[in-house]
Image (cartoon, rainbow over all chains, first blue to last red; front, side):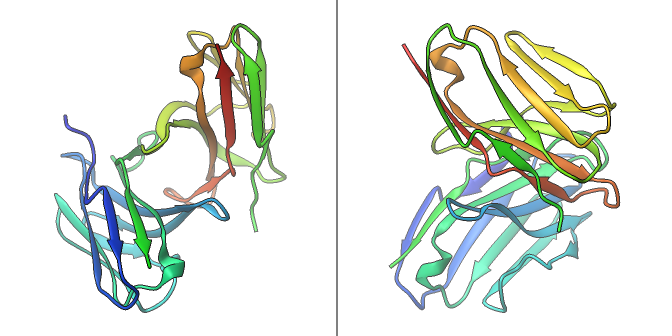
Length: 113
Length: 112
């Protein structure tokens, strides 16, 4: 298995632009998580999907953030408009619900200038 | 608010030395996971401990879950440069089947 695949690995964008991050979870995993990691706040859960349905989006910072999971093999996290304070590493993780730990992707390092 | 305090935040030691990393909380967890994260990569699961008092070994790494399931430790024997990385603990909330409480991490550097 190729693991959780995220794209792009790096993204540099100007303030106000739309940013879309992509994730392909491990085949057969029915839970998908988007996390954000910063030095100041560590790992923060943004949104949790189970069987493609958003279950908990309480961690989404504000309306500028949105996430979708149109099918079991693809999810997106969109920021529109982006702001410098959104600069962070964004991780997607998946797991088979109820079984053990999470498998993380390699992350997308987002820089908003 | 549930917290998981991890210590030390930073540790730099010579190859061959032993070390212990701690995660402590006032809350009970249903399980606790340890991850290692290398620069430019996502966290990788090392172990999950479930039962109070449980001890698991992974080569030179020994993980222990406290009897009350509120704390955990990671002990590395004869550390090697390949052990360098950010070590994260994450506690699974007893009232949730998906939420993890994350420690802030221990940045470990093993010098050759």
